[in-house]
Amino acid sequence: MHSLEALVREWPEAADLSAHPGPFARTLAASSAAARVGPVKTVADRAHRAGPGEAPLDLPDQSQDLIVSLMSLHWANDLPGALAQIRRALKPDGLFIGTLLGAGTLKELRSVLTEAELEARGGAQARVSPFADGFDGAALLQRAGFALPVADVDRLTVRYPDLFALVRDLRAMGETSALAGPVRPLTRGIAGRAAQLYAQRYADPDGRIPATFEIVHLAGWAPHESQQKPLPRGSAKMRLADALGVTEHTGEG
Image (cartoon, rainbow, N blue to C red):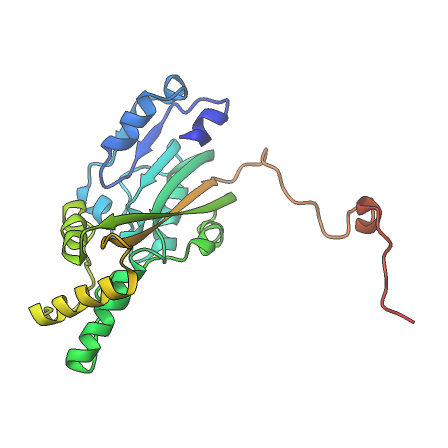
């Protein structure tokens, strides 16, 4: 929201692709940018909000000034493809703002579930969905055709009484694993051993366990001729050493 407040321009056509579209509308209503953003459309296709990129985006090409997607894109099987759909739906010089879970999310849970299942069965299935690396965010936007890409990462730690409380919270958020293919259920023994490992490895002095959530923030613009562009190679009019006020050493002699 700070991005919209800092940009002095209007967004007549705006769309929210979030799986849960209410939070953005409520935050916008309390923001100084509210008067500059037109009525925010929500995508009618619930399946697209749950699995971005699986079907054509229900927005005409070059129809939106602003598109927002909060905490949905980590469900995309083809993240560059989903971002490319969003970019095509933006008008030239339109803005995309998004957030998704990054690779560090639930790293503790992933570790203990894998170890507990290996101990019991000699092999382990993936139990936590894979997430994009936040440091690749700008490259993903570039690949999808965005200009002036920006990516940032926040890491949050949430504490729970035990592993089972964490799993209940993930279910309530709709953030349990949805990996394709047959999944062998975990036994009570494996789940109990995972909870024991979690407490042994990660518990705080008060006995509560931490869970890491990595939030990747993305922003990118649909290309437009008015945007800043890098100068051609070799067009500099000043040597870097002169600009920095240092002496250049060639390495010779």
